[in-house]
Length: 330
Image 1: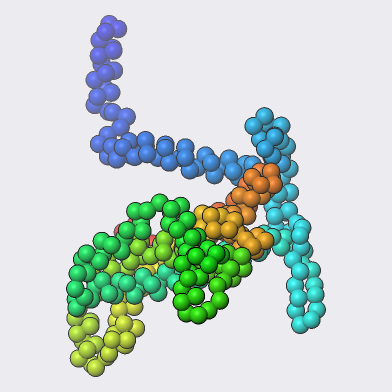
Image 2 (image 1 turned 45 degrees about the vertical axis):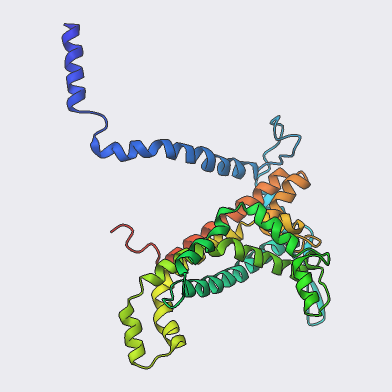
């Protein structure tokens, strides 16, 4: 009797399985989702948890830290040193953390300037690579993406040598050839910031070129032919035909590279540790130094959590305003 009941239950299980064929894609995705959660979601959740504690190097691993609520966030946003503003000869002190807001401001300035440089260079290169009069453009496309295959730390180190303060640095040698004085590139705020931008542009342009070349190849030739019949020159065709046709792919690539620029760590850290005098500390470098240099793990975690919120809001707003998600559910 028990054998019959066991066989009967087995037959019912086969007739009504827990998972059917429609669930197969989910089962195939589950291992990757588990690994993604282990290496992404858990560190993020742990970092957010640490931001509500007074954890330090000594207390983090033995669990003797305390829960302090939003004190780290209050210190990051409104703590000392306070921001001093000179306006029309009057000096006033604002009750906000000058170090944090300087890092936030320089980070967004870096995003704006680097993205503009990347878009300009990438569109120019893409136009050359899609011009039918350029000989060997297929081979040029292969050479263009070489920077993507090099380790970022290697490329940044090379650019640090190019912008070396010494006279043998390539940038200073070019200035000497032009009979100009050598520049202390990495010891001055805005020349170091320029070096950051050029390095970031070099690292990111291959990705943007690939996106823009693909977009340019999808622009109908009939539109260019009609514009030429109307007497439009190259620049008018570029402004009124090419740019509107590639606007969405360029916006997509710009949002992705803007997010990467906001989270940039290696360039300022390898170049000059965010100097001089921490004036060029991007937000991620600022959080890293607070955690590992000044032994304030809780505050460093709070800075990283705030940067996560800011970049998530940036991505969401740009995707919604740019209507890049239109048609996803269709």
